[in-house]
Length: 200
Image (cartoon, rainbow, N blue to C red):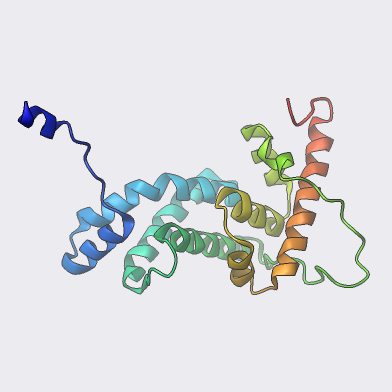
């Protein structure tokens, strides 16, 4: 009876940090493979959301994990592995968009300037209650900077401070940009789905 009970104990999965430590210690590729399998789907979803091209997204996932593989020793555990990985993902995709369009992907430099027209406050529920396929379409219609900042805030739940550090802007500027991006998302939604309320 004891043997049966013991065999039914749940298998404890290693943490991300444990897998990284093991890989750095013995260079066993199986440890990195586990990390890849754990996050590849999520990274692909982010790449699709940003690049809007399945082929580019698949290639990006491979390139991103090669970059992670080569730089894993630099991971310092100040943030979680997932946050570090997603930061690399955002940087890679932004660089890809810049090269593809030959234009910078930046947040508006005049965000928060005195004299800006006030932006209506849009509740988070406007985004969170949209049907998934509709949210994807709305995000695809937004400028890259707005789409990326909304993905960071609402998909990855990054803090305002982390987003500000990523874009090297003030927290107040990021808050204003998020407010404006939500307003744009609502305008886009209304223009496409005016016949069907968001809450439905």
